[in-house]
Length: 308
Image (cartoon, rainbow, N blue to C red; front, top):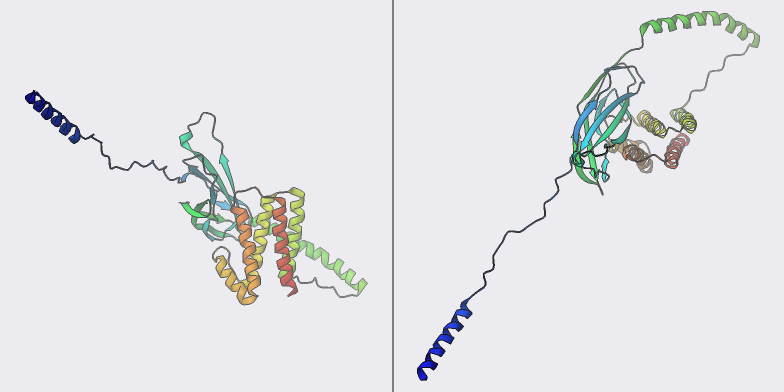
């Protein structure tokens, strides 16, 4: 009996030790599993529709740029004002459109954005865009992407000489015919001819602004009217402050305006130009109320400088 109890105790103790030392094996994995990050959205230059090589002064020059985005979600991306170095060229404006995808197209191919830049030149000779850089910003203004566009080189031709000769000959004949008539009229009236009044830069700009608005109210072409407002204000700033809009930035303009006028006027002029740029490059549809607000701001500023 004692021996049986002894072996029962030994066996029970062994079972207790075996169960106490057993441990569950827990696989260890120290690697941190992270969700895959989406690849950055970067635009690529797909193709160009460059303008022809020769234009006349004052003609509109269209340069179409096709940009492919790898994703459909680009609504949060906005095009900044382009970084340009222009020679004998003036940027009139830029329009944006998105090419619609055909039904059943591969969604991984993204979409194509078409940017149409419109320029003009005022004098014969060479014309070029020596630097052409596009930038996009996202959301609250964080820099995202930039794209280098090939340089643009053009030739601005002189007016045709045969038409010029015909004009000179016709003008000379008209002068010869008009001299006797003017002499007779002068002898009858016996009054000296009055010279036409010389308009100041402010009067000339205000007159052109009124004519441009009257034309816009007839044809309702918002983009052309915005380009006209830009050209008027840049031309007035160049005449009064010796400022080159194709080479000098707004900091240089504000400095020159502050030296000639008050700091308040310098800030107002800079705000007007930046407000116009915001409308030109935002990609949003132009509203009639916003155009009238820009027109009134420019008109009031130039009229105030006329009084001063």
